[in-house]
Image (cartoon, rainbow, N blue to C red; front, side, top):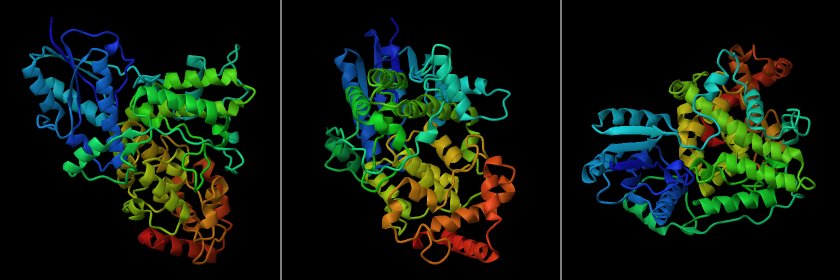
Length: 512
């Protein structure tokens, strides 16, 4: 019987994959911690440690089930720090006749393994990861011949295809496809947030390995532990906790931000989900089941808002990634060239919303989607940061950041660098939005109401300056017409102040 070598990447920890349905004789699984993956961008310490901890736990689980596993730790003397070199040495040492791998979700690695396999003198085969609802090309076919790539229509189609939140006649449950208008409330502290479910995953050994190799990282880690789920059993407990204690408020406050509550009612499942410890289908089905048993306590808007993120947004972003790569990574519609401000690495800024969002990112390797989109991404876009700079920062700083989901969100939805392939308009705002959705403005050095003067919020000048500067590129966008009409009502003196102050902020952001 031929010997097989099967590679498992760090974001392919799916114990329910058909590979593992039975112990296959003469089959060896290999997992590799590598400097090449640990250093291709500057990762948050918790992200790097979290990946290694999850991979090591997964290897132990495979061995417990009877599978033969070879694991290269980051500092193993036999680790050649390169996929091809590690695989080649195992092919020789174990007389392997066939190499198998699961299709990578990152374009860079997908291209790498295509080229590597062409050099092999043994047979090889690539397998689906058996994780997503859709394939890489489903969205390509869905939008074929269509001018727009609107996520909402894709999401409705997914609901119909999988029979999710539908009445017997095929109409949407609750009478609407989308309850987003109900999902934009500011948290008023009256809806109680239960104590977090925290896991005490000791990672002292991994930290020592990283320190020994002097790998440069971002951020910190508390008490040598990872609090997020790093195993399947922990992910399932986190899902149950979310459904039981948080889902009833999730939709209302999914866009809310608060200085003292970085997580609010969010599920904290994205890291485990993106490593495939738990599947989107499991999450959707479990939340649906919980809702059906508790409809007297949970409004449909809470559940729909959550399912939209998993079934719609996540699958849509993956499809758009594969549809437009590798070109997507180079797009820069506004030709922005500025560097990312230093305060993105230090949180040293007088703008309280940015200080809080950056500090949360540094402390927890986490920020929810509105903090990323409407605070961190909003400022970067308004201050004309090169999207390459923001891409690298977002990819490195968050535990759940893998490129297939990070890149289309950053370059497309956040920075509009794709010229509108993903977002129907730029996601920009002045201070009024920040104040409406958070308590950040209360303790800020700047006045969110002021439009002129040294104490006026920088977001106000930057926002209106953006509309002035980008109008030639956005004037035909119907969703921008109301804002342009408001711009036209401003006096010449106010416009002059806006442009002068915005110019100074863009040139010297760390002064603010």
